[in-house]
Length: 387
Image (cartoon, rainbow, N blue to C red; front, side, top):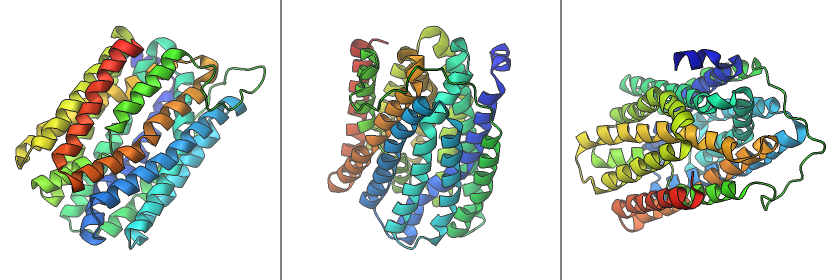
């Protein structure tokens, strides 16, 4: 694997560094938002579900738009730069929010930035990496992304332990955010495949292979049960974990994902993406079931979050590499747009439904529903998509 890593082009490594810096800022904020809503703004799970669902769904619409524009304009970098810049500006402004609708607006802006950059960045990675190293390239990117996701919560835990106000912590995210923007400006974009004429925008996915469409439907079912990760942190707090340990719990999941993403995604280059995704979705379902059943065993949270990090490592890179495997090269921008639209758009009903089940029925109902969606998606991926 070391030899394969040396063969990856500089653009792959630089995009990984950009994600590391951006996620260090994003994940510094991420575990603090539910704490901020609950302890400062006095908002509950329903508000959290609405905020995360609306923000993610709105950003997902832009993922399709920006992905299509990559294929039409044959240029990805401007979208990537603009997306990271918007996120870098919006995160520190959370310090000025004095109600949950204010948090909603700023999370919306942050997710719009993600929507503008995600599909173009994924296409940029796919164009930059050799076909035989595609899984490794996406795995390395996810590993560096998760390295940032490890740094962020650790920094948040240290700042909370030092009794730094939440508003001040939000302001610190400006530094790594701006560094990410500077780094992405240094990325040299590879040439986009030449097309005789721009592809028309088509909501029916006409021209994309049937297996890719079945993959999108299966992904939609899984994502219906894959609500915002903030509910995991809220569950940890409800079980009895102290406030200062919540960021460390998320850091554990991110650390496992960081260490395992590259080797597992590289393994998918040899054994196939489907096997890895099936295993990852199965782990997800088991973790959610046990989190729902956990009535107060705080020690159990640590191995469960470690397994959740393993799920992230097994699926994040392989799911994206599979898109390039199933879609024509000339339509990679559009294909990644549809992939990210499907994954993100389902977060609105997923987060809203999860929050409603939690508050109106019981936490076990919410976590059990998510596990059921995961197990059904495993069967569809294996026997219907056949990857």
